[in-house]
Image 1 (cartoon, one colour):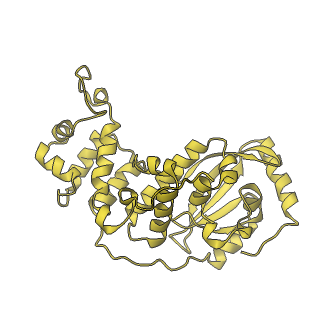
Image 2: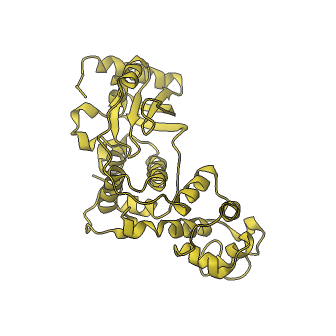
Image 3: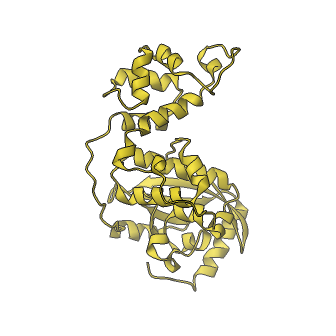
Amino acid sequence: MRGDDVPARHDHTSMRPTTWKSELGDFLQARRAAVSPRTVGLPESERRRVPGLRREEVATLVGVSTDYYVRLEQGRGGRPSEQLLEAISRTLLLDSTQRAHLYDLARPRPRRVRRIPRERVPEVTRDFLNTLTVPALVMSRAMQVIGWNPLAAAVFTDYGALPERERNSALLLFLDEDIAARHRDWETSARGTVGMLRKAAGEDPDDTALAAVVGELSVRSEVFRRLWAEHQVFEKSTGMNLMRHPEVGDIDLTYVAWSTPAAPRQILVTYMPADPHSAEAVRLLGSMALTQTHPE
């Protein structure tokens, strides 16, 4: 297992109400540290004790007092205006996903702790899933795998053989050595996974299922804690998965994430072979899987 035994208390990475208000400040600090002064027209010749931009430099660039910007990073800045958020986005060189995350953190909805009902794959989505000739998964915002076709089980793991609570892509990636070994670029997969959880947490910090996944990974994986503290956000839309299957070798898959109209909180992810070798490997795994079925 990639997880490690550590004390169970990690409030700085949790999504609890008492700590969530600091997420805006943590995000701003992380993004401020990632911006080189040279990229925003400031000199780098003087000695700097911390990487990136200082608070007073950000304040000057966005047009507010240093005192106000400090209070903003401390979670005491009230409700910042759209103009200020846009100025901060430009100064910190935020991409569209990071900008949306900034808005989510700066303008949180009233908190209402609630339990998300157990998610089910709508029948129309399940029927469509079963028509696909490429590996495909249906996942919740907490990265719980709630639907799959036989090809996905053959390529990634036999989800039907796992206890339901263990059918989570994030938990498997960080805590299961066999699953981790199937990712030829594990670090990139791990960063993308953490970034997706960060984005989902910013949009809905009251999601108890998501909080449970983040909490378990925070306790059990030192690598997850390190990546979570970087405050990167990522939107799963399209990209490449570089896999290494123990039976057929390397498989390169181009993934596309689709929203499902029947259940907007769920995403359907299709994985298309990127080259003839990968296509043949997937075809072979599909043939091998014909005799292996598990009820969902």
